[in-house]
Structure formats: structure tokens, C-alpha cells
Length: 155
Image 1: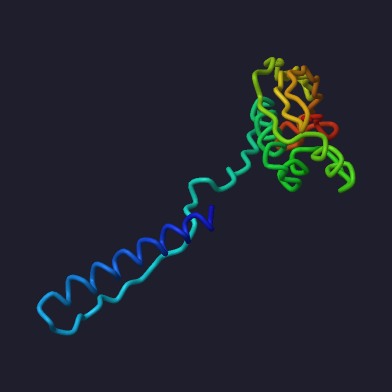
Image 2 (image 1 turned 90 degrees about the horizontal axis):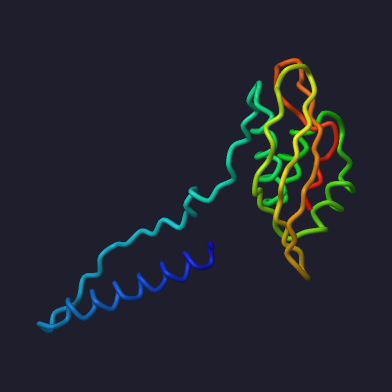
């Protein structure tokens, strides 16, 4: 995306320069070129969504896990798991798929400190696209946030 922005900006600058030269030279005098500044900052609209750790709603944790898997964002996914997650386990998970989409999930009762959610995913791999059903276990921490008991299998 950054390369695309740079190419468009370069083309725009060239067009403005050519116009300024042509417009300033039609009476035989020397052209005065305008000073141009270019903001090459990449727009933040496509930035990673902020992790929402919401007490009392396991569905938010489910959606955030799928976002983390789609982006292959180890820090985001690790924050959703109750306990340690080895780097090798994350790398292995991310290597199994190219993309994942959440098609739906069950809404478990939020009473008590444990919940089981069935998720329906569409997984894109190098060789195929498959629809799968997974069961994810969550526990509520002391702050009321639902976290996965183990790394959710999203690929």
C-alpha cells in the first residue's frame, strides 16, 4: 500500500511540475515554480483494531480471536489465552492457513466461570477453502473477561 501511495504521489508531483512549467512560460518569462510538500503518511483506516477485553461477553473474545488469526497477530491472540502460549505453537497454528472468517457462533450462557462456544469458520489454505466447526472453551478471569483455556484452533 505504501508503494502505491508513493507512486501516485510521484505521478501527481510530475503532473503539477509540468503544468507549472508550461503555464509559466507562455509569455517568454521565466517560470516560478510553487513549493510543494507531500505527506507520505499511510492512512490509519486499515490499522489493526484495538483489542476489546470486555467483561461478561465471551462472544467478544471469540471475535477478537478470529481477528488475531486473520492478521496472524501473535500478541493479540496471546492476550486472549489464559496462560502461556509458546511461540512454536503460535507459528504452527498460523502456518496451517492463509485466512479465516467467522461465519457464526453459539451464544453460551455466561453464568458461572466457564463457557463452551461452538464457532463456524471458513478457512482458506493454499490448496482449498473449507468450512469447519470448532469448540472453544473459555474461562472468566477475576476482572470478568473471558479468556480461552488453550490456544483457539482457528486454522
